[in-house]
Length: 285
Length: 304
Image 1 (cartoon, rainbow over the protein chains, first blue to last red):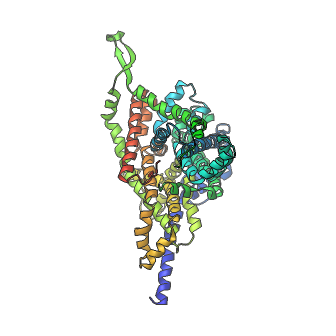
Image 2 (image 1 turned 45 degrees about the vertical axis):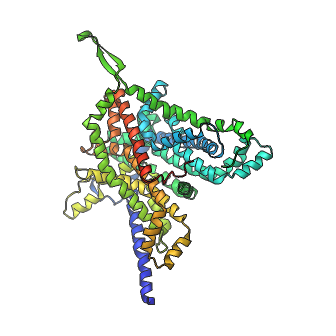
Image 3 (image 1 turned 90 degrees about the horizontal axis):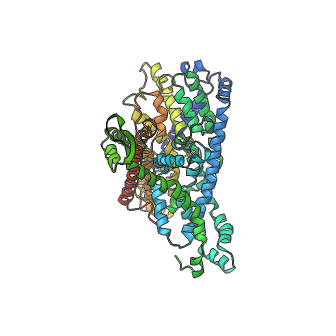
């Protein structure tokens, strides 16, 4: 191969892949860009001007959004944060405990538990939302915060991952050494197992956080009081009321724009904590 | 696993560790399924005769299952789901694999930017994504229809009878590509580079390396992502529900979960909704297990 020819192939090997990646990036960013631009438009502009031309109504829209239903939007954001942070934190700890025990101890019922968890991974919560509603109404919890929080605490996939992480990161020999030094099993978990599992637990937390934050059907079924809605259900109700009232369309658009920004910032800052390599590594079997 | 000391086997610690998970599992996964099965075998029947008859809840056996399985509406929902899934699942996985391979390709530029940009939609809830795309489909606000109108081509019927499947599938693809790309990409990073060097010495091109070395080695990640895409498809609910107010093409029972929701809360027939929920849960489990068997348990291979 001549030198010139090789430079040419080298160029081609750079340009085409880069173009494809950039096209993918544009595809993923366009709706976000659209909603940010649309949120600056006044009611009239939304339906009349070119969609990517910025409008003049941003401040009015924001005022409409934050005064809608006496500040419901902020309530929804706070509710989403509560459901997602409290639910993900508790469920991460519960998953870590269970996964650690399943990875590091032999006990009766371990296989049964494992297959139950695996079945739970394969039949995700959404198909169970209505049965869960029935249980919650028997317990008289329907409509309250607990009805959304409690089902979020159990995450079979989180337990499965915690088990994988515990197997990969907590060495038996370290536990054995601690045992010889007279540490109790609880102490061993607290001062050896837990710290070693932290990178994996951060990933479980983030997966659960996004899962709960994005959940729609469960809170939609469980809640009827607008002030307890998370942001997904709140925006949905604004949109479905909006078919007759264009004002509400505007609120739904600004609401979507405002809710997307903090999430994206969160994702970008937490990106380096995603340890999905552990996930795919652990699944090789 | 090494033999464990006897003292440890006697210890109650592992039971205490799994207790919260077991408790919650039983309360919010096992009991609901059991209760749904119980409810599904019951129904309201007219007892007594004539106008003095009262409606009473009685055991009806498999009636609700027969009713669900013979309901063309329920199956039509699965049919629509199948069309939707046939578009969204292969596209999501194909694009995720393509982007992951390009991110792994030494020659690509702008990798950090693309990786972040393509991952961003994962942070956007499905309902919000449907809202964004819904407005981008709606003729009066769509930038695409704006362009075609300016060019004299008229509007694109994104939400019309023919456009609704690709339009909804696109929302799922948009939301799913990034996450799957990261899973496949991290799995690619785990392949030792000596393997590539060996292939290169044997004269393999980058294409051949991708096809013959990389893709087979990330097969477990592909099975995993495929499985989750499939499970995700079976529980589609929020996206069509959100787009519904924008188009007459989406009926109140467009997908199985919408059908179940309507039975439970609009028609107030909890028994029928329970039967359908049980069928959907069991169906999902069967499909997942079959997929895992077909792919020889590659994803969850090292079970015990």
